[in-house]
Length: 405
Image (cartoon, rainbow, N blue to C red):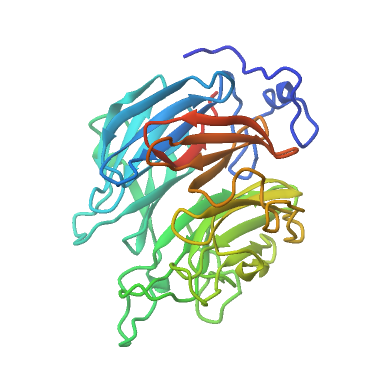
């Protein structure tokens, strides 16, 4: 790979520091906006899914024009996601696929190894949702279909599957009750985040008939794996949320707050139980920041790009999405001329699939289409379009960025 420093001439990030200065920043933990020193060009790593869900793959995209793209890497099933750490990317194959595959970024279509995410006594799919890194040799594997998360060592080599799993976190206390009084099979761990040396795990807590229950965030010491008693619930150690069906977590170091977006009801209805909540990592108190009645439809993807700007994808129905901008300090929406509070011009009432922020202070927005899928890049300083569409062979479902030494 090219090892020359990434340079964006004349560009400044929202925090006022030139990008070149940020490239010299010391390495930090998961609560840092820039986790690792970047010596080479940053890349977007994209999970892509066919519009009819018959296939999927991953792609690599350079973050600067002409946005050189390497698409259709290791194509296979559609129910997949990717994450990155250092010089590697990791693909999770989810429901009834139950594997994690490791690749080098300089050989992104050639697996180094593929290991199972199932325990020997698992009798149903673990449905691995994400791999949350605490260090190169330690990451938490969130298993949506199980009541245990795995502690793993992703740095192991090929042929060392027995050394991949090193421990587990027991989340069975969060299994909700079914309507008949029995205990549901798992708590649906859907998202994870490490901030301030703690692992936050969002739990959706559907019962076995897919009825919604109160959602929680469980908090662990990221170094020991011991659950922290947050004091926010009389029965459970975790934090009961003022929103249901949490989809994503984010952290802003300036505000020192953990943000949680909840979709609420899975289909458009009068059950407005979604929104955005904030968690104070010092007191663990959770408060509702934005109620989902404030915009048209439910909430999906979320990205906090600075202390004064965040973005949400709202949904008014299938493939009817709008990108909206809000102030994370008070939950207010920015003025809009697009007919909805906070709506970003040109990104309304269309199939929007995912959000992610790159190191250059741009927001990458997934655009789904049967014929013309891709990524739109906007400048978060003024919501202007930096790139109208970077074409992809399939719909983008997740974007993450490399941060390599």
